[in-house]
Length: 309
Image (tube, rainbow, N blue to C red):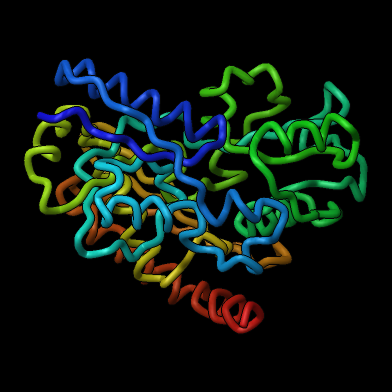
């Protein structure tokens, strides 16, 4: 196998993930890779809201173009950033073993939790999923837009601009910032984003030798969980800015999925759960999507779609 060029975004977290994949490939194949930084739309416009810059795909579009143009051989993504529609000439030969799926709270004043924050506390998040579930748990909170990479967001809460912010626990763990976590939110309180905590490695479909060489670092349990979650997302035609959370995992040989659709104001909260053989992951995702849609989730998603134009 030739030494691959691994494309990644330039944020600290993205570079950590690319370096992790580089080490895994070296361990599995004995071949060392080169890391190439690619600037994405989401990074260039990191103060604009997702709705302003197009939402879905803003963190991976340029990486996919670099792959298709053969400027890089592999691209490393947070799976939660990957749109449901992937270019037909690209594939994911590797989904790495998933880290913690949960969200966590970082606070300006130590000792506080989601339950003990003052009434009307300023809560920062760029995610409609998090906003909706936050307001379901605490309708009195003042939820405000928060963009920027992890260190920018941490500075904003430390300065008191926000009373608290929500972040993915896996990202803080990877950056060695777990000590900043005030509270970890269980999925029953804050259902994770589809793909949260998982790293995907994208390649050209025609590059079969490369795909076969790195396949040993693929994790079957994580892959089947991601297949189920992305099938759910695809069936509901959801992007990364929908009030939808899902978590699939294998327990005692069975693939179990929980999923939530919540209205943006938090007042409507629809939760469904189901299970299947891990080999039927796609069917499970589609089945849970249908159950959510029929229980009123469809109306919520249609309303969100209309509001976002």
